[in-house]
Length: 264
Ligand SMILES: Nc1ncnc2c1ncn2[C@@H]1O[C@H](COP(=O)(O)OP(=O)(O)OP(=O)(O)O)[C@@H](O)[C@H]1O
Ligand SMILES: Nc1nc(=O)c2ncn([C@H]3C[C@H](O)[C@@H](CO)O3)c2[nH]1
Image 1 (cartoon, rainbow, N blue to C red):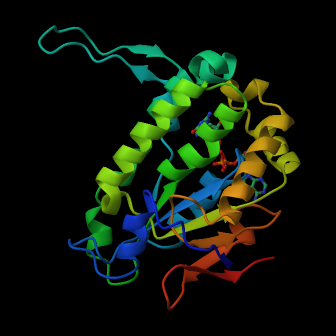
Image 2 (cartoon, helix red, strand yellow):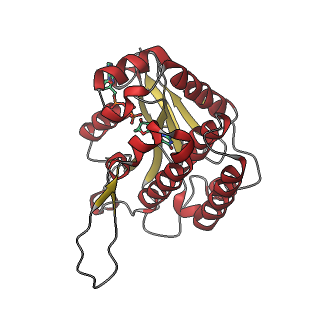
């Protein structure tokens, strides 16, 4: 594991730094919160399942992909109209990124906010061990990896990018301590390996994803973590080419944050 330097002293990171591993004001104080980050198909969900099955103290909150694949209309109150699926935003984004990337990022980020704001389940609150809530990706990678990448690829225009950053900064500052994460588990594999895994998984929407896109996302992750995971917390535990499961296994270090226990 390498500890990423702390985030800069301005902006949304302030709440994270000031709270640190010390006591939180509510009953959730003992529940650690981390995210798993990494390129598409590197093995985050697979690794998350292993974590969850290893101990009842680890609770995984999945990335809300199924919501993105099935956008539901919300009928007006009392209309009696049934809820309907009105689109697959993941597919729309991949098919026409210039048209749909901004819409996708608003929805992905909002759904990540909702999951990060969820209280821990009761069994974690009553755990006698070290309970950990593990989020698949975060509001920080939404912005500093994906939305930024889409902007750099001209799939989000300068006005959309300015608007995204404005509301993102506002919301992260508003919710600061509640969104707070204490660590990041970074799963890393070469873009070629991710491409292979993506192909094997065969998610229909990803049929047009090219190696070049995974290479760009790989670079975004490397830069973000090298620069101290802007917006996000400090502890980074790095996986290796093998990907999930055997490649990285982490435990809480005495000083807070994640420490690598074994890597092969
Ligand atoms: N360590 C591994 N070795 C070989 N194959 C793996 C490994 N980990 C995951 N896979 C396979 O790679 C594919 C992608 O894995 P997974 O769905 O866990 O990726 P992910 O990082 O969660 O993807 P996404 O970025 O889309 O959320 C799956 O087919 C999975 O079985
Ligand atoms: N453009 C874009 N922005 C995001 O914030 C984002 N988060 C995830 N994804 C894509 C990767 C997988 O195909 C699939 C599941 O992770 O969704 C994203 N794509």
